[in-house]
Length: 561
Image (cartoon, rainbow, N blue to C red; front, side, top):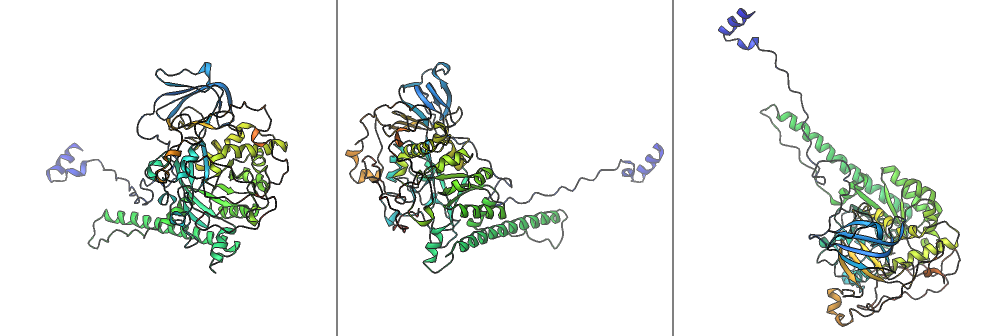
């Protein structure tokens, strides 16, 4: 054999003696990245851990107060420490070491909670004072406007924001209004001063999409003699929009497949080589809807009636959608078993009802009944006035549940405006509870937060001192300063509030002791977007007349409730 190989080599055929070369496998070329997913990863993007603003916040220790953690726990004589924007330790004072050099704040006799979260706000897009000039929450020019973003209407100088901060609100989901079937993307913000929405944006919060069913869209467009003008027209409109989004996604998947085929052909050069397939035209609205279909965009749906919520869940099944939360949802108690099984949150009020026909059939015990069934209950404001007393509204719902004999804990009531609200926004891993590693969004109260006599003493956002009632007080917006509010900036902010001890376990909080134990609440006025006068304390709205009013049309320039 050796002689044969040498002979072959002599005639130039030495390659005949080499071992056979294995063929390289035909590896498929990667498809081009979808332009709305630059990473090329088709999987839903997980929420990233939020980052505190640039700059390390100082070490702070709140010592000696009663901690309500937002996850159900209540710890007396406790300490919470935080630094660099994050909570470091939480627990009984004897078990938590105070970091060397930390600012130690004595909070004995006071309560400490997570920062409050408003899961449904129009601040910044319907700012105060209410005026058509800056009423920017409803792009009511066609029923489906998934392409618009509340962030691009948001006015960071809205005077209502600092009033909410003085009430302990540290995070907000700002949504478009409800004139349209699909109103556009919301924006989650931290309630800290900023020159732009980007300086206030909650880093890592997922995208949200506002939808609305029921009276509002059919009224707005029906009055123009255009679709939708009925509830069946509403559902037909959602179905058409999501079918368009499915077709849009299929068109891009086909483009990717053709691009892979084109790359394969390029491996063998040919004289008739063709250019790369052209990417289809893009559509921002359809990309948002496609994000909802793929689970990357959370669906937040304005819906009052039980039958309509069930219809929306049927639509979700038809398209493989997941509903994150129903908002307003005054009849949610009727289908609490279904909502619990589906893992859908409900964001609602304590006792607003009767301002239109679809808002008539509620009970004060709505949130308590939902929580008893295992639904994530959330108490929202939908109002620049109501946001200034979320704690009292939670106390009202808690008290209604206790009086009705519903087994409900104080910690559950607090979760309606903290950890459950964080879940509805998709930021539950980052804020909403006092746990090590979470954002240092912390509120110190003068007493039990469920008492009408308690006020917010301090607010920390990402570890920074954002509000101090006994210090600088509420910071007025530039707009307020321009209206002569500088001299009134501390009015009502400096007088200390009495410290009220926590009620006995299972007792109704002080905020509810004067309420009648009827299941049907008195008629309330529709959500307003008007806050108190600049620089003045926030008054409670005047009591509404006992008889149910007729449905109320939206005010000019205002959000549709």
